[in-house]
Structure formats: C-alpha cells, structure tokens
Image (cartoon, rainbow, N blue to C red; front, side, top):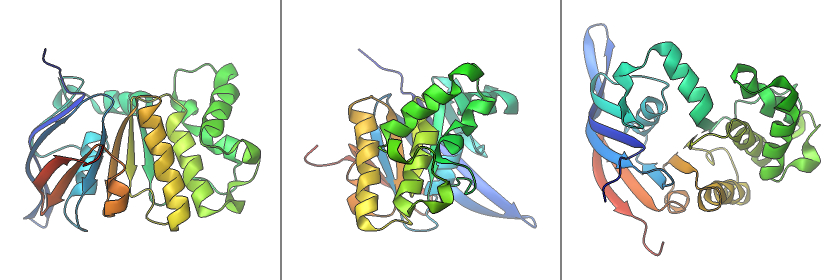
Length: 233
C-alpha cells in the first residue's frame, strides 16, 4: 500500500536576490513527511533550515522546484488561501516566543481564534484547553510579561495548538531557554506527537533536542547531507 505524504518537496530551491546578485539558500531539496511524523531539521547557522521551514509553513514561496501539501502544489494556492490553510492547519512556535507582554496568558492564546471560523462563544473554552495542555492552568490570568522564559514558550505552544492544527512547526524553540526549560518544551512537543498524533517539524542546531524526533534531516549549504531515523526510537 502506498501513502501520499502530508508534505512533499521536489527539487526545492530558494534564491534571494539583492541588487541583481542571487544567493542560493536552498539547492534542490527533495523529501516527504508523513502525517503523524516527528521530524527534526538540523544544520549550522545559514544552512537554509529556517528558509525551508518558512516555505513548508506557507510563510514564503520557493523560487524553483515544487512543494505539495496534502498532495496539492503550493503554486495552486492564492495568498489568501495560503493564509487560511496556515491559520487552520498549521501552528508555529518561534525562538523569540512572539507573545504580547501586556496580555494575559489566556488572552495571548486566544489571538489565533480571531482569524478562525470558530464561534466566539467557544474561544474561552478552546483557549483554556490549550493552556491546560501545556501545564499552565495555574497561570491562566497572569500577565505574560511576568512569566519565565520557559513559561512564555509554553504559552507560545498553547497558542499554536488552539486551532487544533495538523502540523506544528517549531523553529529553535529551546534556543532562548535554560536546559531544564528546554527539556520541558521538547517533552511537550514529543507528547503532542505520541499521544495526539500531531505532525511535528522541529528546526534546531542542538543534537540533544533533535534526537527527540523519530528522524533527522541534516542540511548543509542548502542541500540535504543526510536523512536518517533516530536510533533507539
């Protein structure tokens, strides 16, 4: 039996142009990611891993090759469709948290619902469930500026979960955290994958973090150096 990958890239290329000079960030990547996989994308700074995440997360478009999400090419989506699919089916967690400091935890987590099809009467309930899922129920009404870095990142994960996405993209989610907080965050991502069968795509340069995944794609100079399962998984 053959399966169609949730995410499939074929000879993917990205060239940035500055004053007529082109710089290749991605140089012909090809791979697939099945629904329910936990995949880490590793590579040194400047290797192209964040560029790749932005393309497969519908935040940018490639300049060559093809990207298929649910067997449909990104080239067939309008910008409006990209935004709708991104909000409904994808959640994002970034290194810098990107939460609003003056809002409470609950208010931050509710923000994606403003652009969703969810009835407003359900917003509080859905946001509370997401906050509980990351173990922050006791901080529900705290102002976000008063949280620790690890707690802020857990708020960011809850916000990524609130629209019940198929895929969670995490770009260096432990980069600004101490080792204990980083372990908490990666454990939450691992649980979301193992217990809830969500697809997790994690970008990191830390081997210990990457090895929480089932598979590691290593990128060097915009090319795939290796694509291997994690041992002992």
